[in-house]
Image 1: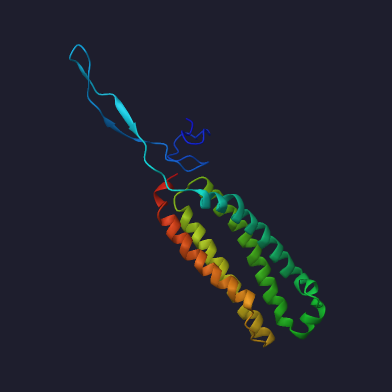
Image 2: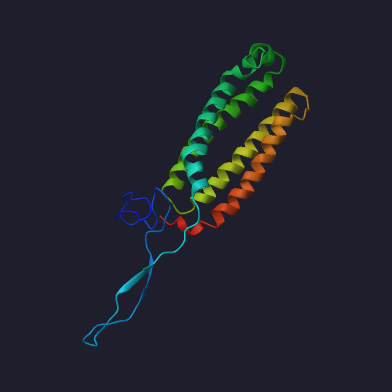
Length: 196
């Protein structure tokens, strides 16, 4: 079976195209047609149902989640090795000698980041295959990403005793909350598509 919208082959049993998201099954209604010999036939006339736009969905699965995976791996490795301090103009050995507990916080955050990288790949695959519950997994991924980032900032502030409000961190946190809400609305309108 091939998609009527994009022409890609659709695996057997899928209700939606895995490429563009258009619904495979179309609703049909009988129409009476009278032939010349007064015999009535009821061929089925196809009615297409308008589908919601999927550009944002494609952006999420082809760009955002892939980039998030690479970004999380990078952040995780920087946190595990302490290179984030070296790259910021400091010295990780000096920082860890002043705040030994910070090394444990960084190790925890590094492991979390690498776990979130694998979660990004898993969520991307679920969304791309229109799996049941995939939008909820995506929203959970966004929420956990936000929660872990805030927890790391707070833990680092507690360990160092320097409670500073970083504008970039605040903006990032606020934008994460806004994205979570907007994506919740976006996927609520398309929830019926995730049935595989």
